[in-house]
Length: 55
Image (cartoon, rainbow, N blue to C red; front, side, top):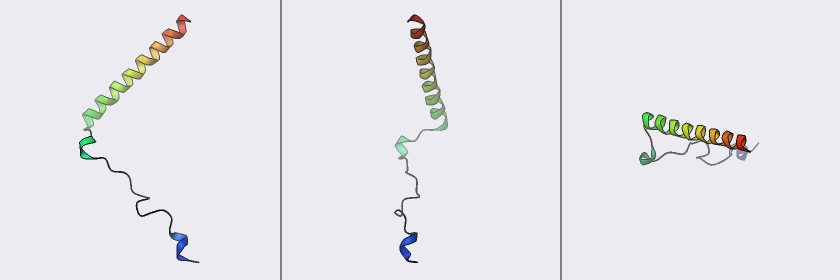
């Protein structure tokens, strides 16, 4: 058995990427953004259903 058996990946292989402070959102901002995205998805689904009915 050699020492190379245990060396897998680099030192940062298990670490998670960090988000810069200027890109972080507060919890309320995150909820607002998620609700906007869900509303957009909902309207797109409704439009698609209306277009399918017209065909």
